[in-house]
Image (cartoon, rainbow, N blue to C red; front, top):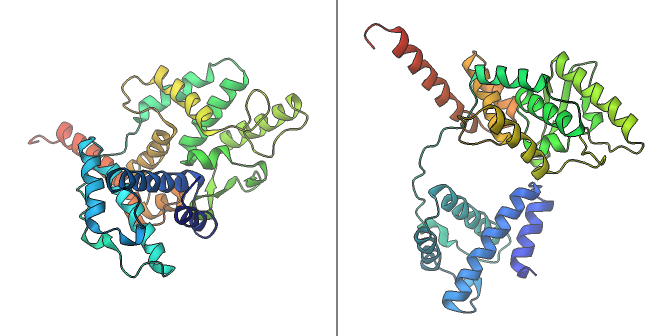
Length: 298
């Protein structure tokens, strides 16, 4: 059972901020870990009495456990949001987070698949045997790469979100923000054929587009395993083999081929250009390669 003050914050994130279940769980886990640490080290403590020294001691313990800067920053962000909420509701009069220094993040470029490798992957998918597993794999890979959707957006995609006449999909993204994604005729045909097969196979089919072999809705781990399996079989050089790699690939290939940064931002459903700009680093790396190969003085 959650501490009452954590439960109130979790409810706020769920019902007022309307964060995804994954994000809410991350905040919740961070706070549980923080308060468990304080209880073990200092005994029972009223959270209103927590100072920056208590928070620093927790961060030091995380550093000793070799926790990455990225994870540390996320945990600090959780506490900042937590104290912002406490200030908003009048529970505390000041936040101890002002004296907490955020560790520098190591720059990590998004992993993406090269265009030739994607071409070979798509060709390999065409020769796969037809079963619900291979149909799901094929549609997942193609939709991720063609639209840049997030994993949760794709597995929750409902049939009524697809507009076949306008060749577009309406997506409900983070914070329940809607966006429209254009879709090619090839992908639309695949989705239509999938829907028809689903109705033949399962009498009471789900409103979601994608289903498992038993007709039930896909869940994140199932989709992750399918994508990971096909990427592992076909692209050996990848460090990561997750659905998110296909989202990174979608964005990188668009920018490499001259797409406007603001347009890519809208397609990905980012709230700011800063989130999208990380993909321009990959574009710059490609330009450096071209320069080294083509310039006589490089």
